[in-house]
Length: 128
Image (cartoon, rainbow, N blue to C red; front, side, top):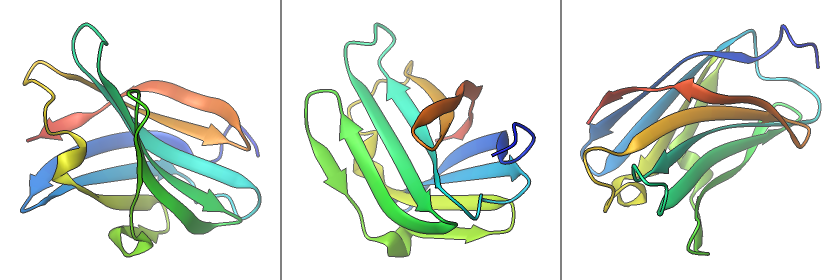
């Protein structure tokens, strides 16, 4: 994949009903070949509690929608919570994925391509 394809341009989250809606705007389209992951890392200010929420695509199609907590728990969610069209990916995570994180939490976005870090620490616009 070229470094000019699928770069995260803007990431935002908002609380809607019982969902944490994460919107990932990318430069270009979701790669049609290989693995591509977009996601969020949420942490307490001291990084003692962290969660990694992600949406994984394989050959352009969503195949995994999950939240991994560094305490060792992992939840997999129904792919019905993922929408993607052109250069926008939207994930409707359960609001419970960030419950327990204080207002001063840290939130960044990331992308991975074929198993390697592609982007990290991308700023996230929050409306919680």
